[in-house]
View (cartoon, helix red, strand yellow):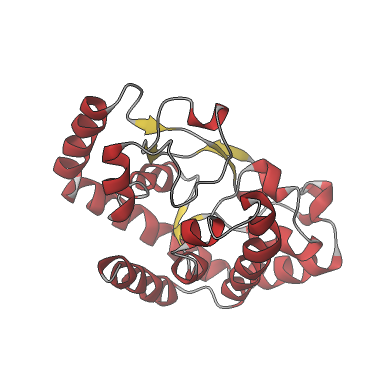
Length: 227
């Protein structure tokens, strides 16, 4: 782990220090978690390579633009990285609307709605896992503007690699509908969604194990299959 003194200034608070000290004691679990990430992401990428090819062709045929949407997210230790997501919206969607996506967002393409319904847009993040930017399980990475809204303790969630899935992802799998329930989506996200998600992510940090990650992955698959 990076020495605490070398972390960005916003990490230097008592709440984050408690989690930092706790994670130092879990180095064995963190090493096992990384080895598990590499092995499983490679296997899934190989197994799903035909699906990736079909999705790539379908996205290109359906609308103009690249196959992947490479949005900047905040990763471990506050370092920004570009996430791999199969593009489900029109080209330059982030320049013609909010950073968030609501249920009835008219920027979503026809193919994009199908991909989102099946939760296939996130599977390309296995490339980020293999590169070391992400983990299979961990706090979902936020865009910089929402990290700026973090309470001091929430910076502790940036002490580990962000994940493709998390308990908070399962709990808020219908986030699009919540954001479109009325009012300003960004205010709803910052005030109603971000705090409970962050608290769940902090809970995850207290009990990191490979077996715990496997359980969350199976729960994610179940949640997707049951809509």
